[in-house]
Length: 137
Image (cartoon, rainbow, N blue to C red; front, side, top):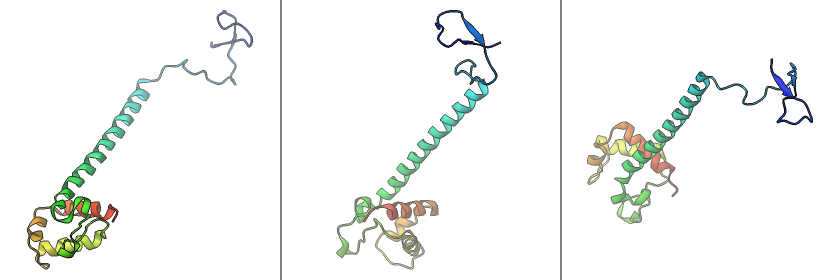
């Protein structure tokens, strides 16, 4: 039988009354089950792994896009527009994918772009285009 302290009675004393059915469940009386602890640990680890994976993906994508910096500027903000090297920052993703496919297939001429784009997988090209589309102009 659960016992509760009487109101006004000193808490250090042994004066207690029997618990009533409408009494709220006291906190800390029952230990957490091992299943609850296991589920909580798995949830925390999963959230941490997902966050680490997301950070890793962002870093990987940025490193792919960094290969474009030599010609198109840091984060795709080219300053040499008059030389034909367009800024990539803020460019429409669909348009960029079309242009990269044209370089890869030889439909658009360039000095080195047709060689560079052949070194990327379709997923990498998609990631690069998404990265530059998300950059402010």
